[in-house]
Length: 187
Image (cartoon, rainbow, N blue to C red):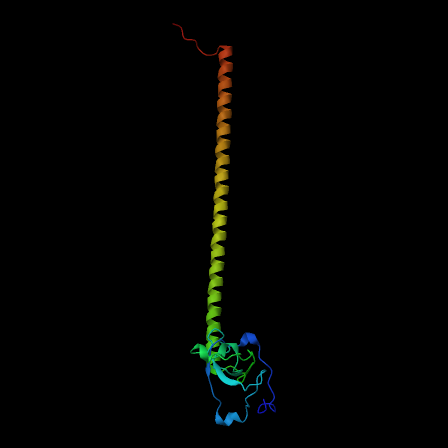
């Protein structure tokens, strides 16, 4: 810690932004003087990495400092004798060097955003079209039910009027028979 004691440590970035995949990176000789390598929380000098995480596209291509003891960056032992007796503490310190997203990544992000927007709009339009078709089908079914109800009512009304005419005709015939107006056939 003696070599890194005089350096100031930038604040740790949000852990949710921490990329899951990365590659080794290096600073340009000109920028090395402008960007000092900070110490992490456990006192080790941070490593320089570049994000390759496609799942977090806003981080892809950005460089950052990370603790050499970071949980995702520990060296895998080749055999049981390579494991140290007491592992170093897992420090989760990291900080971005590139605070702005590179132009090519911004273009990719914009293309992804436009694609997602188009897909959303298409999905939304399909949903509206489906709702319109369902509404038309409900209205058509309602009209058909109303038409069927009216036809049934008309049939019932016609049947009732026929029954009434038949009853009236039968009553009239019975009344004529009682008066004897029908000619009697003689044998």
